[in-house]
Structure formats: structure tokens, C-alpha cells
Image (cartoon, rainbow, N blue to C red; front, side, top):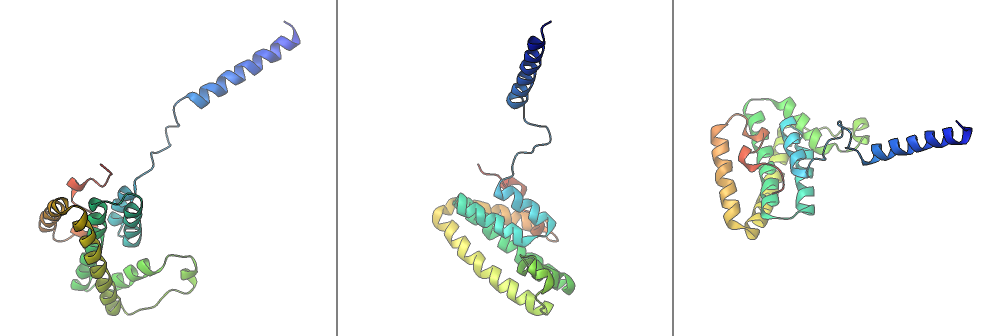
Length: 179
């Protein structure tokens, strides 16, 4: 075999292998990116309401609809319900932790965290989320009153079925994915 032919075969084999790698299926460990609402659902289960709100706000910004506004409103209501639960069970340290989660969004906050009294934090959080929930609920209602009415009926049944932890997730029939 001639020396030039051997190196040509190696290069051809390498080119063929690279073509197969490029054209072949995506690696098994590569996951499909989650939607804003899917991420919001995970954040709610983790109790990270700041990021749940931000994910729903991104959904409203990128895909405005009555459904996205309703989901954002639900996260506000869930946050309010969670705070009421913590206060009702005298878990004031957790109220403070929730306040810090909502207030701290940058690494600088680790060096100078905001200090608040838990009972004041409860009032501040609840008043703010109730106002925001009213605003987003009205926007959703303007876009599709019938859909919003149906979603809130489902949400009411969900709350009644899970009075001790409804705020940790949304009704399963809501399927936090874009239709």
C-alpha cells in the first residue's frame, strides 16, 4: 500500500466518523429545556417562591395569555397561603427565611442581608402579593373570562382537597406546559 493512500483512508474514516457524530442523535444526557411554567412548578415544590414568580412573569412576558396571567396570580395566592400557614403554625423563623428568599437576589445580599422582624415580613409579603394577585387576576379576566372562571373553579377544588399544602403546587389538571 502506498503511504499517501493510507493517510487518505485515515482522513476519510475520520471525516465519516465526524459526520456520523454530527448527524446522529443528540446525547442521551441532554434534556429538553423546560418551559417557564414547568420551572415555576418545580420552584413552587421547592418553596422558592421568588423564582416561581419570576418564571411566571417570564411566561407572561414571552407568551401573554389569560392562562399565563392566571398562573402568575395563582403563584401569588400560593405565596400568600404559605405565609398564612407559617404564621398560623408559629413558624416565624421560616417566615424570615421566606422574606430573605424574596428579598435576596444577588450575591451581595450574602454580605449584607436585610434584617426584618418576622411578623412585619409576614404583613409586607401578604399585602404585596395580594395587590399583585388582584392586578394579574384582572388582566387574565379581561383576556378570557370563561377560561379564568374554569381555572379558578379547579383551583378552589384543589385548595379544598389539600388544605394543608395546596400552596406547594398547582392543580394537576393545569399541566404547567404551554398548550
